Image (tube, rainbow, N blue to C red; front, side, top):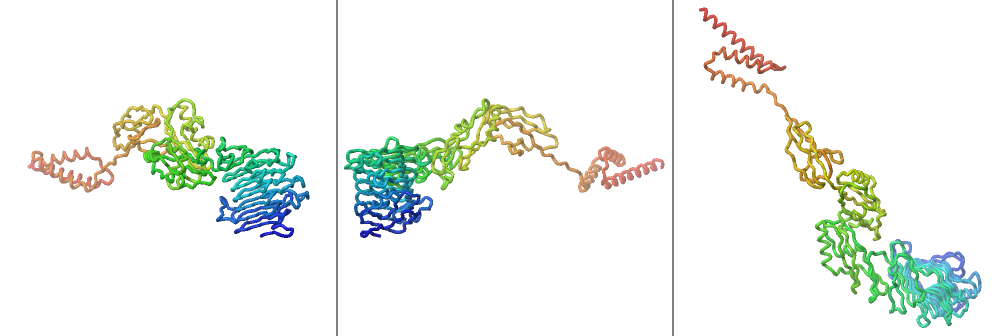
Length: 633
């Protein structure tokens, strides 16, 4: 849309709440003096929102390929790009500019001579007593170029500014003569308050701001406009403040090629932005444990330490770069891709992977570099327990955590929470890569109580101790209390118990001779485990606490004579009768009956045995009677 004739603006949204969603390419061009392309007059409570189609999508970053665009320009003197117009600047309710929200889109704004690209029109304060206020940018790629005596973003000539908040997106701002890229415009006013600037705050995470002043008139990238004589206003609360989990960088200098990082960079706390530098760049990135700023290449590189459970497979180079959350920017503030980083020291990678595969614990160095050899060295911490980061997708959504088992001599004072955490070497990171502090780890109080009761009682043993991160990730370690342990033996009704054995905790005991118990078979030495189960002791295992081993017995079953065995008995009887020839039959039968009477007691069901006895007895009596008859004959 173009307006080059008549008395009209391209679009006027004054005194209404308006949202403009950019789809495709759009142009608003005004070539009429004192009018504008996209106009919002006055400082009432209404809002103008400019956004792309994806503004509400989580994590969206605007690109020229994916987002709609707007080109807003003034091509004549005092023609406004985005803001109020000079035509109405002397009307109090129409003067000034406020409540602009840019949430996304590719926006290019260029004002005509003597006007601000985005903000309050030239002379709004002198003629209407108003200023620029509450300009907010949270997304998009915005380029703003002001005319002479006017800022790129903020105020036109002699217009103070209170409140420019940039919390996201990419912003390029360029000031005209005697004016900064972001701030108030210059001019001829002798009133210092016409140039005042307050509350320019750059914050967020993925935010980049490049502000360029006017070289010939020695104007800063961010700050106050000035009069030709050098009179300028006061700048208050001009700051950069990274979001939690992010860190900030400021570059400034006397030209777009002669600049460097400030001494404070990188920073995690609010920092003042110098308002006397021609060129100023402010950007943020996720916090990294190790950072390097290269003064020669103007590159920034950052990477995090890595925490992993030892054992198992080693790491690939790609895994190490990714787990370290390696990031950086080139001299122009453009982000590097992950594949732009290298691991120049293969020996370091070999040492890390060899230690991990062999289950070793410890801290190992790893150097990461850019193509221009800007380097940082991080630490890969291998711990006995925790997250195995080398497993694909092993780094959970809750981050990384690791801790080692602990061995301490029993006795003395109880462990304090921080003391036992430090002894375990516990480390952790949340899913954003931020380091967890010791106080962030929640400890299992019941487990710690059991450990301390054993320690203060001079008892030995192996105990479990569990830590939990704020995100719910858990790691469990073993706490071994060492000292002298005693093992006693209970034969459980068997022979004399073996002598008690004493040894250092963690050592083995000797297996004693098996006990005996009449009528029973010995099955082994048993103990009661922590779950109350009776478990056989393996004498190849080390002993960690006092205990009693108890013999387990199995009863030997008894055998009884059955009817089927009787024919064998008869056979033996006949055989015996045959061999003892010198003994008369009747005498042998008498003896046999006597032996059977002594050695055997009748039981229920032994009717067959009784019958045999009666037969034998009858036969004997018959023999005696016959013998007597022969004698008398």
